Amino acid sequence: MTIFLFTIRRCFRNIMNIILLCVLPFIVILMPNEEWTLLPLGFQLYGVVLFFAAARITSIIMEDRTKGVLMRIGVAPVTHLQYLWQNLLAYSLILIVQIVVVIAGGILYGHDLINPFLLLVVYVLFALTAIGFSLAWFSLFRHKETAFVVLMSSIMLMTMAGGMIWSVELMPELLQRLAMLFPTYWLAESLIIVATQADPTELAVPFVVLLLFTAAFLVIGSKRRLS
Amino acid sequence: MIIAYMNDIVKRYGSFRALDHVNLEVEKGEILGLLGPNGAGKTTLIHALAGLIKVDSGDISLFGKKLNDHIMEIKQQIGLVTQDITIFDDLTARENLEFFGGIYGLRGAELKQRVDETLAFVRLTDRAKNLPAKFSGGMKRRLNIACALVHRPKLLIMDEPTVGIDLQSRNYILESVRELQKQGTTILYTTHYMEEVQSLASKIVIMDQGHVIAKGTLEELVENIQHEEKIHLEVIDEPTSETLEELRSLNGVKQVIHNKKKIQIISSGGAENVDNVLAVVKKAGGVRSVTAEKPTLEDVFLTLTGKTLRDGEEE
Ligand SMILES: Nc1ncnc2c1ncn2[C@@H]1O[C@H](COP(=O)(O)OP(=O)(O)O)[C@@H](O)[C@H]1O
Ligand SMILES: [Mg+2]
Image 1 (tube, chains in turn blue, red):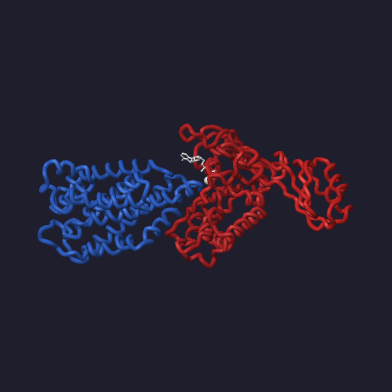
Image 2: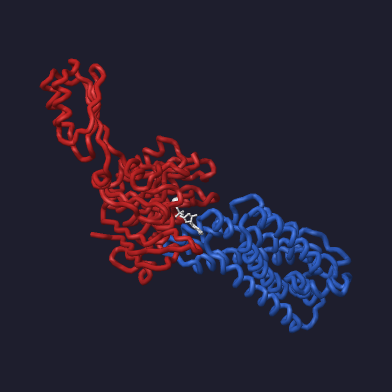
């Protein structure tokens, strides 16, 4: 589990990551309750934080690849699969801990989270999808900086188009359909289902879609090895 | 005993053959110098040997076992010092070593001890807690080497470990390689600096354009090329024409040029005439100085390929 343990350490080795992982959760909790949102504002937007955080920490894999460290790890008696799953496990664990802290913090702060457990499941599923998405994304690029800048913009775009900031119903029909291609749409859907206390079985569709997204992204992302 | 063996290896990139029917044997305990200009295929060969890339044809065995059948077991006993510096920038020197020790299965007290020893070996103990960002080029190189040593490999493969560093660090690295050999490590040392191979290696393999073009000890390689031996003499008394005549009549001598008290004698390769020449001039009054120019690896390379090793180097 050497790779796993060191990945966890490395996730906290730069300021940007520390802000995303340790500071922003508290801002999420402390954001005010707005009349116009179903969930407290911070929780409505928390998915964006998760997406950015997932992108930041998953970029470690890309860094290893471009710097040649991954090739060096390939010389050791470790398979590429071991490297990959230990990294992904570390990222997932970090985000899951963050989600637990955010939800527990929200409850303690006095927010009405309606169904905290379901909310936790929604966020965890989305975090896994975000990690998978970032992995697949980085596997397509050669330069970390380019990959990063384009990814950040795409996340913003997906956030807006996916209905996380405003309701998709406010968008034209065509865009509403297109939005379904983004994981953020399914996160927004799930949040609405939880917040409106609809029948939890309605979560099945968004959950399955998120899981399928995750699986597809992982397959794409794990294809690329060295070079 | 042969511990690494490559037989008839071909590695293609598209239609280009980076390795073209290459054979290689590494003997236990030796420092094998793999010499060749940039683009010769050294890194490709090393990566094939370390199981990093698949070859198109040919057999590779290490420690008496086929690489493909026992890859994990073999990898455990190899250390690779990469040509580029491949260390974690976000981990300290110590953590880097702990990581690489860890992925080779070292744990707990043993890991700590090996990390301490390795840090001391590359003289980075004082800097163990620093991130490599603060290191000089030479220190990064040393850490890069250390990462391949923590698990005490039986076979250490070094891919141009001295590129782009100061002389002091370079000498230190060369010294460390000798020390490792003394401790029993077998070393495959790749470089395009012939001086390094000349001073380190017990056996030399020369590569060019994906081919092994020569192998042997330095002496064997040099003997194999037809090259002239040059002897420069400074004598005490100006030589008489009899002395010059006597020198000319020595076996293998092609030419004797003299200018006052300086004499230059050119003989054909392998003539080993220094002793004979000295005997002649001693009789005729004595020698002030003598230098014999031996052909170098550079000459070997030049003879074999018609180009110098430095061709195409971006320095
Ligand atoms: N992944 C690759 N794809 C295509 N060509 C490659 C690749 N790796 C190496 N080569 C080519 O193979 C040749 C040998 O390269 P290399 O083994 O790195 O040489 P050296 O280490 O001796 O400088 C070079 O011409 C290089 O361009
Ligand atoms: Mg090379």
